[in-house]
Each structure stands twice: as structure tokens, then as C-alpha cells.
Length: 444
Image: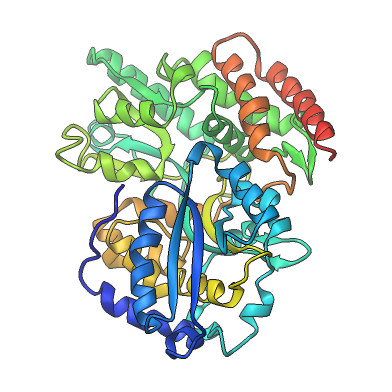
């Protein structure tokens, strides 16, 4: 998504956000240029766009400079920059890479306790669900970054077909149990067959990428499994294996998943919905805007509903099972502009800017008030599922090389399971040994 003008009251929102950062808003802050090192994409575009408004609000005192990092090298390049130089003042310290980056970042408590820099009441940290705060925090040093975007995995479904077939999908925050989902998919399968329709009941991801590992992990968590016991690999946990078995079972036991699922990632899942080739899909919330666009997606536009991922019967509906993927701003410990960097991060993640960003379609948010705002949800119905899902974020282990574990240890086993080369039990055992070897090599 490219940068776009902010509509409506964005200017007013930007001005209102000034209450959060009294020093920056005073027009008397020391001159500074805050460098944000960020991978190219919609997140980069949004920071760049709003950065000009922030500079104007400071009376030109604090300027924002953007440095683009190749997305496929984001983590190693970011670590190298903040470990060896003061080039980057702010970096993206999202949940999935926090353990790698936190040792090189400044804890935020000192800045947040300084009333000349930060208005805690106006910022309202508790507007972020506890689960979002947790994945942005370090056990020893507390909050390490401020969240500006939250993504989730969810169940997309064709509302028109479900109504036609008499299937009621629970509305967020309610959700199906795994048993109910499996029964519904079998009903969908029979309806598709009876009508001789060329579609699958559901599309899921089992390709060899980190996303497929994240989806598989949600199934393990959804069954109450603990693939990590604290920071130690625990993939052979009985409940984790049970979750993997049901995830794999959609394709290889019940045979309700699209046969192409072993090769499906984000784009293929989106296309299957876009082209009407599936009645449901487990996909990222980011796909919703494309799928709702009548010009880009005439088959799916206006016909999709959004539901939470399932949990196992007997567990509470509030079982944490969503893989946390966030975008947040952390301050480099080597930064020479730490106060100015904090002022921008706090302003950019303030309630007013979060609302302006989401209202304009420029990004997501972790703020509960934004994700549940009736006016915003009416225009973007997917946010009801996003808002409920971020409260179900599961904590991640505080281990470095976690990205390598997802991509190089888990993903090949998920794919081997989906292609029928391994059972869930075998895949879990190989995840366990692979994770132990990886962490041992990393000195953990």
C-alpha cells in the first residue's frame, strides 16, 4: 500500500496528539533530526507521511528522516545498525523480532516517567490490550517499544454461501471450537459436492515460509499446547501434537482443505478467496482491504465475513492462540537523539494518530479504542475480528534466532506434514530436535 492523503479530521487529530508530547509541542525542543530505519512498505510510507505533520507540530524543531532497509534483510541489517553505530534512532521492534533487538534498545520507563516529555494520561497506555503490551516488553526492563500496528490471523468466510447453506459463523469475540469448525467444513464439503461447485471448503497455508509456521503454531496453542516451555523447545507436548494433528487433518484426514494448500502462502490464500475458489480461508487481516475492493475483487467484495480462529472444546474461549505480529518503534541505545526519538514514537502511537491512520486505511493499530470505534468498524468490518484477536495474542519465547526457527526448522516440517511425508507426531519430533540444535548453535 502506498502513501496517500489523510482524509477528514487528520489534521485535527495530529494537533490533538500534541498533548501527548509537551516538549515537542512547545516549539522549544532542541533542534534534532530523528532517523527512522524501516523496511520498505506501507509502514514506511505511513511514518514518512505523518512525520511531516509531526515536524510541523514541533515548529520545525524535530525533523524525521527515513532510511529504507531491504525487507528480506530487515533483522540482520537492523541489528548491525543499532549494534555498531548511532545512525538509526528508531527501528521497528515488532514482537517476532523483539528478543533479537531488545538488547540494543533503550527501556522506555525513564522517558515515560518524565512529565516534561510525556503526558501519560493523554497517551493512555492501557488502551493497548495487556497482550499487546506484553509482546512489546522485556521481563527485566519493562516496556521496550511503542506499538503502532497489530496484525492477526483469522478465518475468512463467504457470508452468502454460509447463509445459503444454513451455517451460522460466530461473530467476534465468540468463536467456533475446533470440533465445530471441522463439522461445519464437512457440511460445506457436502453442499459443494451436491451443487457440483468448483471450490474447496477451506484454504490453508503449508508452504515453506515463516507464515505457515505461525499458522501451525496457532493450532498448537488452540489445543492448549505449549510448543515452548518458557524458552525451551517443547514441540512434542501432547496438546501441541494434537493441535498439529487437527491442522494437518483439515488437508489429509478430513480432506476439506484445498489440495494446493502445501504451496499456499499469503498471495495464494488471497487469490483463492478473490477468485471464489474456496468458501473459507485462514488468512492475515491485511488481505481484507484487497478482498473488499469491488474493482480488484468483484467476486469476494461485500461477501466476506471475519471470524476468530478456533479453540479446542473444553478450553475457555479466551484461550491465547493468536500469533503476535506487531509493528512498534524502539529507541536505539546508541541514538544521540533519544528524547526527540521518544517524542516522535509517543506522538505517532498516540490515540489521535492511531485513529487517523486506521480511518484513512494507511495501517492497523493495537489500540482497543480504535479497533472498536463504531464509525471505523462500520467502514472496515474486519476490525471487529482484529480487535478481538489482539486480545488473544500468545506470548512468544524470549529466544534470539526465533525467525530462523520459524523459517528453517518449523516450516520444512509443516510442509512435510502437509505433503504427506510425515505425521504430525513425526513433524513435532523433528521440530523439537531442530529447535534444540539451532538454539544450541546460537549459544542458548
